[in-house]
View (cartoon, rainbow, N blue to C red):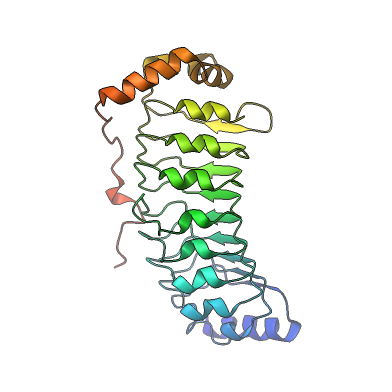
Length: 274
């Protein structure tokens, strides 16, 4: 395997290919297991998915031309804080790892447009203080994590077009979600949501180009009834004065939260390597 990797590095260096494919190569240490990789600072794309990478060296930031970094399906428990200094990084895929937090300063990326952190162990306490400064972000995939609430600062991500929060433990959406005026896709299926904030009605999520997925939630009966008829009816209903009154009363009553229905202790992202 080491000889094959060496050959891949040498060929890339000779051709100055902007992309390198390191998929499923048994890599554990991105630096030491792939000698010479860190000198290829002409790279614009690194695909290192389906390995056993446990950590990323801080000098990953030396890839000043890198636009796409794919680390899907590895064993990462943390990311280096230097990552957010990468000037051209647009797409970061760290889905299917073991992350329980994002590093300090993560919101400082100057160009990040797509963040995929699907299937990790992240929750509302995992995000650094400046996370919602990512105003270049267009798509955020946080499905299959452990969020129970979403910080109200979500409303600052004004360029967000895709937000995936499916299969979390969300019990409430903040009203600031209604500030995401460019949102075209919202995935909130498989949570513990009973009501929707009326401000969600500010958004246009009904139509051929929009996606709104919300099944497998324990909705209150009036919302569940509207879903039976169709998504457009749900949005008409949450915009109504009747619903705003009911929503206010529901929140004031402090209704009991629905129980967790899925046991996440056996998730691959939780299992420690042997």
